[in-house]
Picture 1 (cartoon, helix red, strand yellow):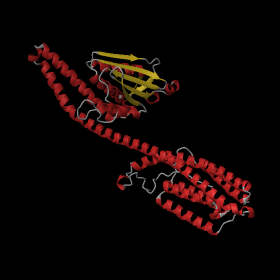
Picture 2 (tube, helix red, strand yellow; picture 1 turned 90 degrees about the horizontal axis):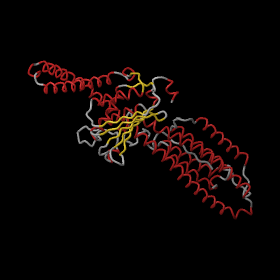
Picture 3 (cartoon, one colour; picture 1 turned 120 degrees about the vertical axis):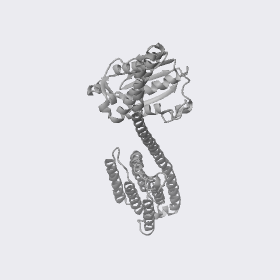
Amino acid sequence: MKTGLAVDDSTSGNPSGNPSGNPSESTPASRPDRALSQTGAGYQNMLQLIQLRWIAVVGQITTIAGVNAGFGIPLPLERMVLVLLCLVAFNFGSQLWLRPGRKVTNGALFFALLVDVASLTAQLYLSGGISNPFALLYLLQVILGAVLLEAWSTWTIVVITGACLAGLARVSTPLQVHQEQAGQFFSLYVQGMLICFALNAALLVVFITRINRNLRAGDAQLADLRQHAAEEVHIVRMGLLASGAAHELGTPLATLSVILGDWRRMPEFGRNADLLEEITEMQNQIHRCKTIVSGILLSAGETRGESSAKTTICTYLNDITAQWRASRHIEVFGYDNRIDQDLPVVFDSTLKQMLWNVLDNALEASPAWLHMDAARERELLVISITDAGPGFPAAMLAQFGKPYQSSKGRPGGGLGLFLSVNVARKLGGTVTASNRPEGGAVVRITLPLAAIAFAPEVAHAV
């Protein structure tokens, strides 16, 4: 009695690896993603194969002992035990071959099923051939092959098992049944068929259910990878558009700055204090726009290491919150820095922009009150931004961090949070949101300290 189970990177009957079966959808970018997603499922199913072989070893020992000792039917024990030892040796070899991350290919699975068929054929040859009720286990090998193998491999298994079954009908070692047991042989055969059917059904239900679960997990991982890839492409396009827009805006902003400077020196404006105040405010806003444009160009043209600056957690957070507070109009802004141990870290303009995006979104929802809280939770930096606005709609919370998810009703809205989520994800962190029972919302930014640490000793201190 022998069964086998493993998994292949290909779907059944679809050697291209394209889940939809449409060749036009199998792109160079999608094939590595599929291989990556299926490697984990293959590893898990190969572990199940090894476990199932040990079950098969126990089942063979039990069956041989029961038939030989329990029913008194003599069997060629030495040769059957030799086949059993070969099966044990193969399973030990499979354990040594298998390691985490091992990619289980169609060829590996095909070879494993061939070993299963060979072992089953040898045991059936030594125990009655086709008259052995456990010959129905060939059907289990065929079904597993249909689920796990490519089309050509499956049909090869069908041909091989059919040939083995036909050969056993002509050549085998007959069972030596005593004369007094001859009348009971048919009853024993029927009982064996019932046991074999129950065994086949149980193994198929259990292990094919596990295979489907692993394949669904692989498909979910693949879908997640494709979603991330689409978001990365979207971010690149947005970066190119932002960089181009920044270059285009540089000239009109410079022109407006020159015009306002000329107005300030004109006598007509110099005698009017209100106009001078408005000109000053306009110049401040233009300076702010130029600073934003410069930051966009800096982020687009430099790597993180080139545009980063060494500082500490507390210093950086205190500075950027003070800068944000000075450039925004808000009635009450609370800031609580609860980081006891200040650590040297490296921050850059993208992290600042991420935090400002979240603060600006909260300010639009709650212009009268905001609160920002910074804390250290073991190896994580956690920043929570709380507002007193209407909160997030349920549909937005379900799609939080996706592009163009906005409650403001503006075309292209929702990109700020989308970019913030992706910046945090690049650093191994997360951005999550929830609504407060008393009203308002909380956005929680979590970043691993190892991703922003400046010196090796920071990681040891954590």
